[in-house]
Length: 68
Image 1: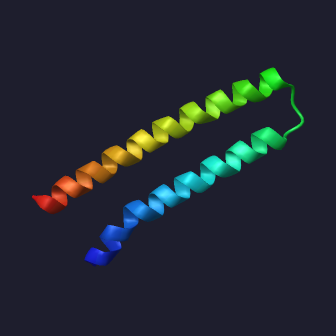
Image 2: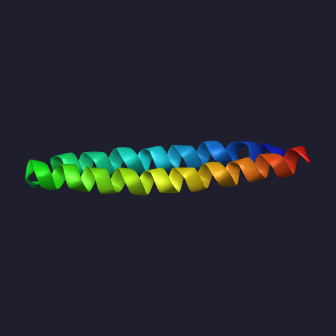
Image 3: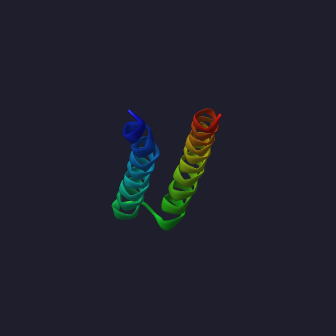
């Protein structure tokens, strides 16, 4: 059970990284103008940042619970 808890943050971060890479490639390979592509990249980056911050906060809470 503890091994599963230790792996959960790694799996979550790997999943997020894969999503970021996939989204970035999709945006760069899409047939859009440079301005539209930059706008999409900025929007996706903001979304990923928000999701990552939420995931980090959740991981912090789990670590605090585990250490308590």
